[in-house]
Amino acid sequence: MECAISANKDNCSCTYELCNRKGKCCECLSYHWGNRELPACLFPADVERTYNRSLRRFIEVYSKP
Image (cartoon, rainbow, N blue to C red; front, side, top):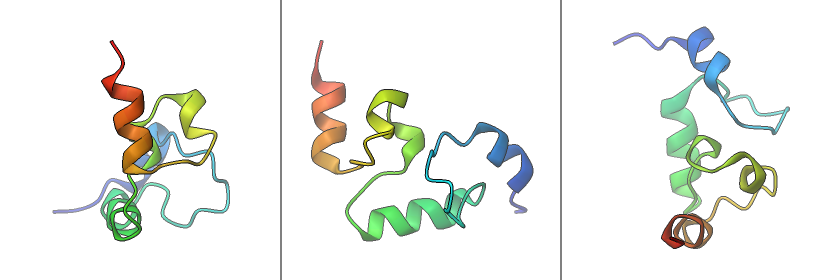
């Protein structure tokens, strides 16, 4: 399977400009999961900008009614 890096970059919601994994979803997910985090694309924009990508924060955000 080929990675569609340019298309992925167009949809990437990560605001960390220096990230070298933009558009490389497999690498991004692997990197964040290795740090017990989730990637930016799984968070609302206001939460993503805090760079708190912890599992705890994800659960807090999505467990609210």
